Length: 453
DNA sequence: TTTTGAGTTGTTCGA
DNA sequence: GTCGAACAACTCAAA
Image (cartoon, rainbow, N blue to C red; front, side, top):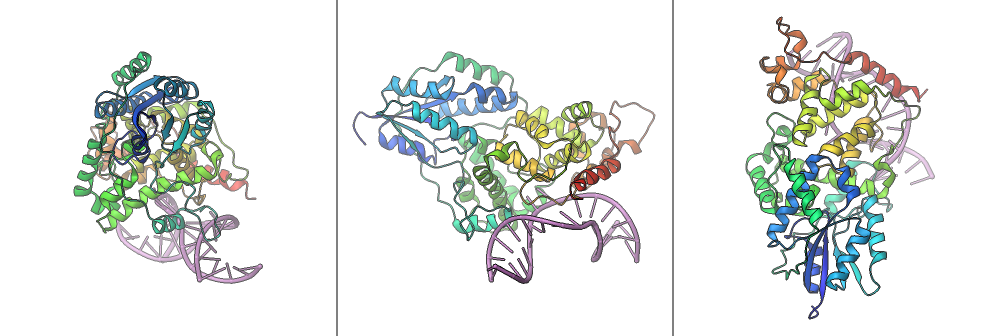
């Protein structure tokens, strides 16, 4: 460490102090200014729920830094070099972020730094950096299962200890940025997770104690809600997947292995995006001849949870209310939009990204492509989820559906999944089904098959 | 180079 | 009600 030197650590998707190699590198260099820049382009695209969640995470990070997080507002290409100049820093530290937008943004920022300032990127938000896992011919994997095998074989680093004592430098935050956080927090949805590293680890340990060992089964029950709920924390790097893998590493149960597999999916999709930046919003593997519908009213019914299909409506309302949706239900609602309404997947992916607190470009959009049949290991064209069967199978108690659709509260047990069978002469206000599933399934198969002839 | 086995999450139909 | 087969063809990965 050189005496008197200052580094800026620019936080992005690494809002934590523990196990943060880039921050450790900055601290090893000298005094550290911790910076977060609210990028209007990114901020405006996030829905109210994710803005609130980001604001909560930033507040928590600020507290853990003794109130010394410097917040700025503006395009990073101007805001970051400004702060670097203000504190007379000679290095800028970041954690790598390899999404298409981030790569472009970071190149521009580095180019805009004064010549005497060096940029240093350390680590990634992944256990294995995107682009690392390759097959025998040195090419990236196209399908998940072999990727996962190789990813496990590659192994991941152990968590690094927190920097023992960061000597934080203080600089005023931009009042406009502070006001944006206040505003975002005021609009926070109910059920937002507790922000902060400690809360995340605590939540994860509770999951390990209570839920992980029969995770293979329990994860599919949206009513029981026994998933780890780590996705919002992972979104902003409040925890690093390395930490989760280390915490669960001692368990060799099927459930723990399945959980690791879910982490591997996140890593796989980041890898796919790394190699195929265009797949964020374009078909990774287009289905030849496939055409789409644009049924505006039906799309709006889907968005608002008024399709008349209980499990679909429950999920869509949970998304609007909480900024979160159970994964099983994400698949069901995505299948409904793409296969029952025949809508192009980016329409749904955009809506999800707008509202999800964990909205992650790579996982969200490739998940959508998987459902739509345009993604990795394209699903057989005939795989169309039946929203009624799925509801009965995965929410047999009907608890999930009744929780989110009050109009169905009068229906006991699984009857909540088939309200049309339970006419009691009263109008409970639940909408009629907007489509006939059997008919739309046939049409979906037709559309997918057309290009093959 | 060729071959072979396999591919997250499903549905329906008929025995 | 349960269970197995059919629903296509293709691409990938590794032997």
